[in-house]
Image 1 (cartoon, rainbow, N blue to C red):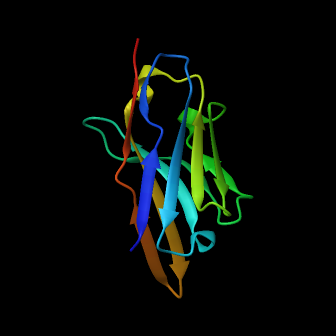
Image 2 (image 1 turned 90 degrees about the vertical axis):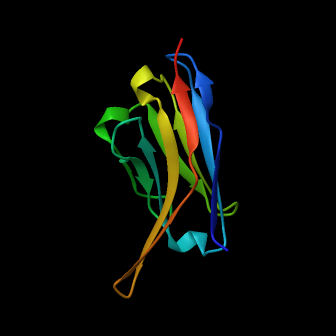
Amino acid sequence: QVQLVESGGGLVQPGGSLRLSCAASGFTFTSYAMSWYRQAPGKERELVAAIGSTGISTNYADSVKGRFTISRDNGKNTVYLQMNNLKPDYTAVYYCNARRYYFSEEYVYWGQGTQVTVSS
């Protein structure tokens, strides 16, 4: 059974930091690119950061460059999102995503999300 379990969300003051974790199971973690998305109330889900299967390549939304760092530990089947200098408009539900293309087939898995609230 495929599972992506996010943790680490919560309430933080502007300028603060949080570290999100996503523990994966039920699939070959090292074959999948991993990403973090977020969805704020009334808005569409958007890509925040992505990391390749080996951890070498990363990509970030312009709005979080220099503030967020995505990383993965393939030995622990876990992907992380370190979020620094948080702003109130980063308030959203953050979702973990796993994606793989194999013989023209796309395999996509989602976590249940973790709430991040940035407020004083």
